[in-house]
Structures are given as C-alpha cells and as structure tokens.
Amino acid sequence: MADVSNRRVLGIETEYGISALGQPAGEELHPMQLSNHVVKAYGSVSGREAGWDYESETPLRDVRGYEVSREQAHPDQLTDSDLGMANVILTNGARLYVDHAHPEYSGPEVTSALDVVRYDRAGDLIMAIAGQEASRRLGRPVRLYKNNTDGKGVSYGTHENYLLDRRTPFDRIIRQFSPFLVTRQVFTGAGRVGIGQSSDTAGFQLSQRADFFEAEVGLETTLNRPIINTRDEPHADAGRYRRLHVITGDANLSEISTYLKVGTAALALHVIEAGSLGDDLRLRHSVPAMQQVSHDLSVGTVLDLADGRRMTAIDIQEAYLLACRKWVGEQTVGEAGTTAEMITEWQDILERWQHVLDTLRNDPMQLADQLDWVAKLALLESYRRRDDLGWDAAKLSLIDLQYTDVDPRRSLFQALISRGKMRRLVDDDQIQEARLRPPTETRAYFRGRVMEKFSAAVVAASWDSVILDVPGWPALQRIPLLDPLRGTSAQVKALIDSSETVAELFEALGLGGPAD
Amino acid sequence: MAESEQNRRQSRSREDDTEELESAPLGGAKKPELDSEVDSLLDEIDDVLETNAEEFVRSFVQKGGQ
Image (cartoon, rainbow over all chains, first blue to last red; front, top):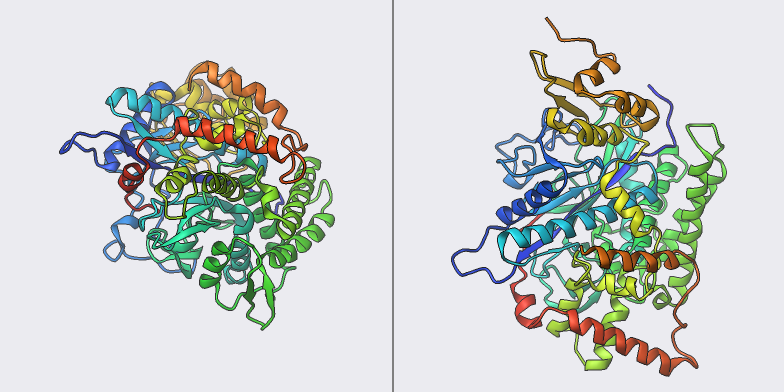
C-alpha cells in the first residue's frame, strides 16, 4: 500500500437546471429529452459521443459494508444504466451527460483547488455553448441554470469528490467532517430566495441546498438526503482509496466561493486523515443546525455542540482553520508527495479563509465582491430599496434564478463580473483553455488526450478505463486507469504525441500487438 | 457565446484579478456616486431580465435530481 499522499485528487460534478420557453401546448419536451438535446448539441460542436463503461460502477454499494438489492432501490438510485441518453467524453477529460432529468457536467479529476475552479468555470462555458446550440437546433429558447432548486420542492445537486485513503475509518469522517459541512455554508452558500423546500416562507437564506437535508448519514442522494453520503464507488483501486462524495454543497458561480469550498474541505480532510482533530466539534443536532445556519443572515446563530458547549458557525470554522494551519505548518516539501506549489496553495487558502471569517464577523456585506450569497443579497436589497419590494415579490425570485443563467448575455453574475464587482481567480483565456485541454496531473490527461487524438477508436470510457477498438485487433481493448495519479502529462504526453495511430499508441504503451 | 462579447470580457477580467477593491466602500462620503452606480447597474439588469417575472418564475419547475 502506498504512503498517505498529500496530493489530493478532487473534482466537482454539477446538475444544471433546465427549461425551454414557449413550448407549444402538447409538444413539451420531457426534461430528460431536453437535457439529451443539450448534451447532443454540445457533442455536435465539440467532442464526440462515446459509450460509458459501467463495469466498475457500483452506486448501490455502501461504505458501511452492505449492498442494496436492485429491486429495493428507488429508480433514481440506478445511475448505471443510461437508457440511450447522450454521453460525451470531452477533450478536457470531463464527462457531459444526462443524469436524471438534468444535463450534468462532471469535471475531470484534478489535484488543486484552483484547477477545480478552472474546470468548474469551463463547465459553465460548455453549458452556455450547449444551450445556445440546442436553442438554435430546437427553435425554442433553452435556459440552463447553475442552481440547485426550483423553489417548489425540488433540488438537484452539485457534488464534490475527494479521494481519501481507504485506511481512514469512515466513522471518524462522519463525526469530524459533518460539523465542517454544516458550518461552511457561511462562505459556500449561493444564496436563495425562499425558505423551506417549497419556499413556503418568504425571505432569503444562505444556501440553495440546506432545506433539503433530512439525515446525518446515508446512501441516498435524491431522497432523505444525508449530510454525509456513504456511496462507496471509488472509481479507483478500492483497496487503497475511498471517494468521499460530498452532496451538501451549493452550485457556486463565484470563483472564490468554489475555491474556498473545495480548498478548505480538502485541508480539513487532511487533518481528519492525520487523526489530529478529535471529536469535540460534534454538533448535538446536525440536520436542524444545517437549516439554522442557512437561515441566519447575521451569521451569528449559536449552535449546540454534543459536549454541551455553544459556538457560532464562524467559531467552529475557525477551529477547523486553526487545526488546518497547524497541519500545513508541519508539512515539508518532498515528504508525502508534498511540493512547494501545494504548500503555496494551502497557505493561500488559509489566508483567504481567515479573511472571510474575520470579515463575516464584522460585516458580511463587505464580501459582496467575493461570495455568491452576499453578492446576490446585495443585489436583491438594491432592488428591494429601489422598487419597494417584499421578499415574496416574483421579481426577486427571478433575480435569484437569473443570477445563475449560464448564458453570459443574461447572467446577472456575469453582469457583476463585467462591471468589476466580483473578484476573480482565473481569466476567460484560462477558462477557454480548460474547456478544451485536460489537467496534466491526473489520469484525466490520458482520457482527454485520447479523446482529442483518437476519439474515432474510443468505444466507451469511464473514470477508470478507456475501451478502444484498435484496427486489426480481434477484440476490444480495455485500458484500466485504476490509479488516478497515473496517466499524467509527465508519464504519457510524449507517447501520445509521437503516436500517429491508436495501434501505435498501444505499442508505445507496451500493451503489445494483436492477441492470437 | 459571441466572440466579441468574450473578448470584451477578457480585458475586464485581467484587471479583476487583483486584491484591490475597485468599487468605493459602502456608505460614507461617496454615497451619491454609489447610488448612481447602483442605479445604472439595476437599469442594465432590468434590460436583460426575463419578461413577466411572475409567469417566468411560476413556470420554472424541475424534475428531481441528486
């Protein structure tokens, strides 16, 4: 078994909200069909449709050690049958497909928080292009939103994935990571008009997702949603790795919100894996606390801890921050795979995290140029003042929705960017680059380059394999990619660059000639 | 996305990649200026907001997801 590596593999997947305008009565497209059009539209302008290799997917396996039978499973849990829906593997290593009744962009595996931001923003650009192309082809305007609820009782997800060492006891993650997820909403929230799953109460809250969580731990993602999801589907060597599937997060437009969301979580998980945190931040009642934090615009609500103490969300975040600062201070370049670049990013995350917590304590509105929920609230408050609107005004719900429109011509987030009112971490050139090119540090590099250069030979692919039809070879060839840190640019770039055909690539990879 | 739009935004974003606050701090002496800036932002947004907010929001109904 490899040493615990400080190089954390991570990524984000987002289901986008979708609708078509002006659909003639009786000719409305089912959202699944509409999503299919969107994915196919992008596939036609960029990338190529390929099958998905489901061989290693186990959505019903629970890390607690049992498997749900397919008969018992809710149909929503069966994510490993695609019913002929479009599926595009992109040259940037991402997957664009139809999940449930939404188009989903699953970003490629990366190893830094800034790369998560680049590829997450690339996903927004991909959806903008896909939406415009689908509108043109269908002759009806298609709208795509990077949000998590329709405000009428339905939610859809933005999931983060963190690869963990299999040896870390899962019950420790449950005890030590759920308080982190509950309290981080003060900076990860995307903001929402409406309180309660169906917006029964007028008002504004920090998070799109908070009202939809009903359990602390569980396997489901579509019903009775748990704060800690136990799906055990590592998409990697299951003897070494566990993929922590975090389903509590909001879809963020703000680059700083996304950067802090994944950067702080990755650091907190390092501390938990190191075993140096302890259980003393456990909350007495995690699920109600999730909603308490989200509903408190003053970010000062005091939460009950299991040990009887009472702390605010900011205080709890600060305790995690202190533990992370200590851990970062103990890391050395050259040990456990640590590089100078990794330490630089960790320190940047710590500084921004501290700045955000300090500012939240004094005046949250000062963060209107950094955090989604504050930017959205500031905009809504300006409208409320100018037009004398109550929180039940439809216009405010429209602003909430249209803040997240992926099309830059309509996006209110983009309007803020254009006026220099949101700070950024990446520029548009970098986002465009991330739309087309894979990250260099993971197997996504191999996947993306194979799609770029040999897509005609790709029969199917998955996170941990590529299946190729090599001309002249009798059988389809499956290349396993079980280690997310293999297939990197350093390892395979020269081989791919020098191979003119997929057969040459096979030879270059040392996979031999055609079998007899 | 239209290329021209993209290019226009690129030049903006480079300036944005700094830690300095470009806008005036909330409140204080610059308030009238700030008000007119906010007003012009809201006017610009009014121009791109979907028409008939009530109907638009009512008809935005999603199927469940994860």
